[in-house]
Length: 326
Ligand code: BTN
Image (tube, rainbow, N blue to C red; front, side, top):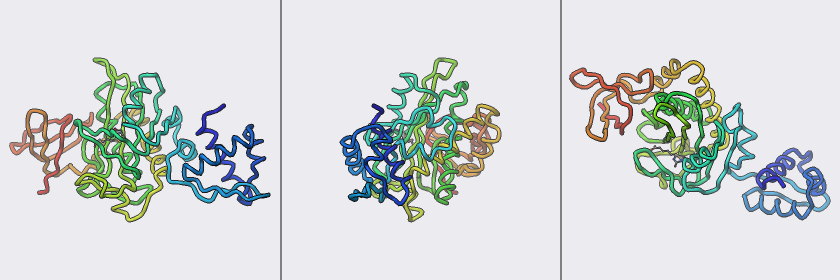
């Protein structure tokens, strides 16, 4: 028998498709090829999942409302991508870290574009060994990418993902955000999204990369660390996380394909346009020193170009960047 999520998805489609709002149990059982007893089991599981399903004698079942959950069958129906999310979509209500699960799946050989989604993470990871607080209401997902690009292009993948998230937040919610090199999306001076890119590489060749994205969508600010915010907090309304996820994947795929086909040129200009750092004073903490200066450019491989007080320019490849208000 097919897996449970797939069957539940089919039941939900039949309920949504039903004319006059009702469909008989007999008709669902017949269409899906299992007994009424099985149907009962699935209907009661769907109710436990948060779907409100009415049962009326002589009329059948009717779907009244659906929960705000990222079940794979709900996300799949919204996908507008060619490969991202189409080469495997793995849903978890709770896991330690979508990046770790995506990594394990990549080791097992899943294809380019597989996506791991979780409602909640118990061990969400941020950059530089930090934690990523992942309560209900946020969007936590990781992509397995096998771009066949050299290792030096990893930075540009992270940056174009930040552009895609920023663009999608605008598309879906109307909230205007900016990107903070190398991996954050900010609303004013507060963080709304973080991206963690992890790679498996041989000395000269990228095997795969795991691109993990965490967006504070409907998360109450009281659950978030200081200097963070959520879309709900700034917009004052809740966002459909499924619509946002599907739009992020769509915007990401367009840029990812462009990077592979045409290089970073136009994407670099977009990153510069969205950047909240360029033209501003920044303080960058590297493992062995601190650099202060004006963020001047994002170069052709995605490095940040900073001009120090003496005018000397430095290219920064990673580090913790603080925006200093002048
Ligand atoms: C950062 O800002 O330091 C990066 C945060 C990245 C968080 C996301 S949530 C989904 C994925 N799984 C993780 O454990 N981390 C990333």
